[in-house]
Image (tube, rainbow, N blue to C red):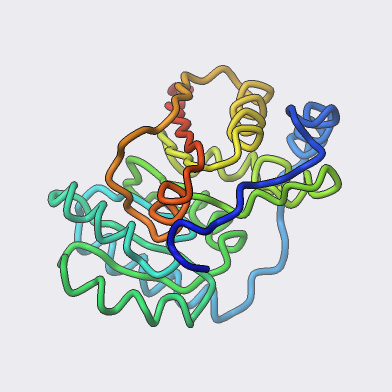
Length: 223
């Protein structure tokens, strides 16, 4: 789709889902565990060795797509190591051209479900995690496909002390904030984004198309 021609999200759901609290509470009752394939275990183990040898604090770009956002984060945080994660080999192939602009970024091909399970068990020095424009799954029946409605959500919140979520659908951001509140008392700030310099292709396209953009910052309290 050409820049400036992205349609706004349309949904019959105009407010946070009425079943959100029930779904989040059910998922919080049990640790989410599924079988992690051997290739995922091996790639995570290899990256684990690199991270422990490097020693720098980490910023994660989960669902990094073609990697433009990862490189922008790397340039903004030169003292950190940026890890861009995406499950698409095709998208990550395009990240190679972006990666030339920064030396402190590493890309990992991985399913985020597997990655977050392994990350929860690791001792990585994660300082912040970005979730930039995840698939909104806007139909009401899609609630459990959204990250905050998925069984992985309690695990996800244990993987970083701070999260930055951006979306062009306010309902998604509001639901995410509510889901966090249901699980534990955290500090969060929701704000509209105006006149920003885009750091992802989607952000650039949505902004050029006149979409309202929103950012949610979550800081997890120490237990």
